[in-house]
Image 1 (cartoon, helix red, strand yellow):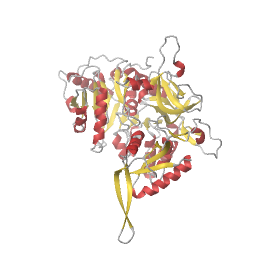
Image 2 (cartoon, helix red, strand yellow):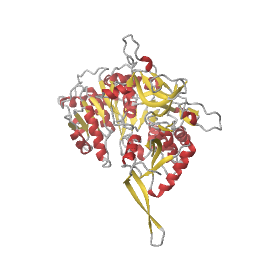
Image 3 (cartoon, helix red, strand yellow):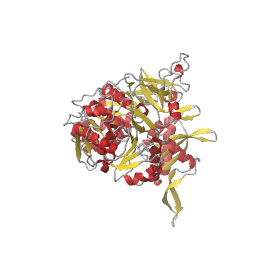
Image 4 (spheres, one colour):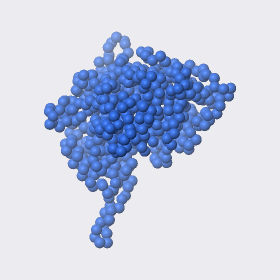
Length: 602
């Protein structure tokens, strides 16, 4: 299906807006200074960098690994690679020496899996990535953005490389929260289709008045496609902040919305919770967020309380809670799959938790009954379809929990160089098999996510492979993690729940970060809380030292990796060791990063 956008590829889109000298992308530097690249500047610099890449030996279709922490250099190098006919492979940059060996493993895997022939990085990042690329079998030439800064011989002529809609545009490696990163093949046609879907149908952008504000990482789909690709296709200016700056000072996000009169922003649920927790009343003084018409939320399970707390905290700043737009998406579908309607704000479904464990999203029986609140993530875009299926691939009816599947022009081709994994995720439904008419069965993307629909609107429950089954009942790890994360001694977002086989029976294990002095209190609080909320007995509660639970580059907890570390005895623990003192009292000492010995009784 052809895109409804005027430009068929991102290269064409950038060239189409090259006459705009006044608007473009504002890049906020770590020191707070700002630099505007007009759309004209972006087009010219993309052409110039493309010429340099071609002069350096890049050929059409070559994969180029990008490890660039600076937003402006990343965006311009990404576009320059596309203009030259190359295929960018964004990789998150390492900013310190912590977990450097694991970083090298990930980078080496991505370089090997993508077959990258060129690495583009910065002088500062080069020492961090050189050892990783030395492990890759593909011959990889290393260039820095300083090399591209040299003037092109003979000026900067228009690069004459034909880029077609069906050409591969980028390899977006998944964040690896449930498995090793896989390279999603995104074409220019996928980019155009999804940009039209979320910018035109979802956000109803107005190129005259809209302005995006984002701190999201540019090496992941939500930041890159949501706030670079989509806006370039639809001529919308943006302000791009460093992710680290937001983490250090969440108010900076709001300051830039206020300062630049931003109309569109997006963030995961945890970011809204972080702002609500960190900001005090005095921090809100002087802010005016009445300009914001879209406050999108996605990328992880959405918690209604996080959004409500944010809205309450920012009410004095004239934040309108009707601007919330819960969404659902994934890299395999380019970015967005469903959007809640504009102006509707947060809508939820209150379901009976006991029935949810049986796969039925039954409404809670009354106002005084126990319920679980699940956020409405909206409907699929025009020309895109969504269904809920059981294990055999049969469609399920309303309020039946099953795997979410989708198809449409935004759905990508599969995983680069991995036909086996592609076949597992892209496959026809049961109804489409064996028609006997010689027609190829239509493949649907099987997302691995669990959900249900009500009146065509999607509600997300969890991940298929991470579901915890105890005595025939299904429990969703994210629900347990959120409840545990609300406990005073546990930082929100620093808890992981999973199932482990103990004597042939699946048991619940909860891991959370805390200090050694709080181990006993945390374990008691978690045991009581989980028992009261879910009627579950926790087999073991592991308290790990702060910042020790494994995470992806985008900050998501890695449940599978945490589970594996627990099983093989490498998960660190914060321990309280009591030794007799001279007076008979006990003296507490902390032993952190001591590995576990594997599953054991609590």
